[in-house]
Structure formats: structure tokens, C-alpha cells
Image 1 (cartoon, rainbow, N blue to C red):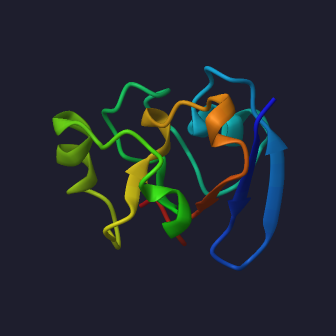
Image 2: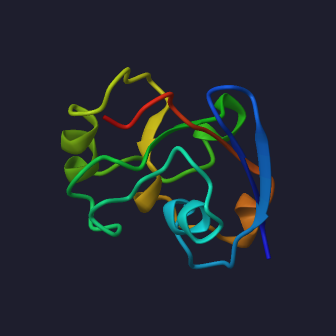
Length: 106
């Protein structure tokens, strides 16, 4: 299983094995990692799974589609590397992915 590292806004690291085919959001929620809420359950309709993809990984992900881009306009403190974690699907080539979590989703 690919390893995903979640880094909270205070610097705490959580390394989690996330099954391929699972979203980064589900990996966090299933492992009770604070910082990703995922109110809509991953349907790209709430933006409470906002995250920052580590700069080294941005180019390795599929770009955000139109719906995700629209939802990212609603997040607090957006950055060029902002993504919705429900839209990032873990695969073997993402082993070692680093995700940074915002201070707040609301």
C-alpha cells in the first residue's frame, strides 16, 4: 500500500498506508487525522477536505478539473498547490505523497 504523509498546520506528521484506489481524504478520515473533515463524503461539493499538496508532488497529480477548481474558490487561505483531497486518488506511483493540512476548514 502506498504511504501518504499528512502534515498538520502545527507540524505534526502522520504517516499512513492508504490502499490504492482510495482518496487522500478517505485515508485521513479513516485514520482519524484531524484537519480533513470531508462533510460531503467525497462528492466534491463542500471543500472541507482542502489540503496543500507538497510542491514536490504537484506535477505528479492529475490537474484539478472544473468542478474542483470551482470548489477551491470557497476555501480559506487558498494557495497555488491547493487541492480537494477527495479528488486525489492514491495509486502506487503516489507512494510517499506528502499532504499539508490547513489550520482550519471553516
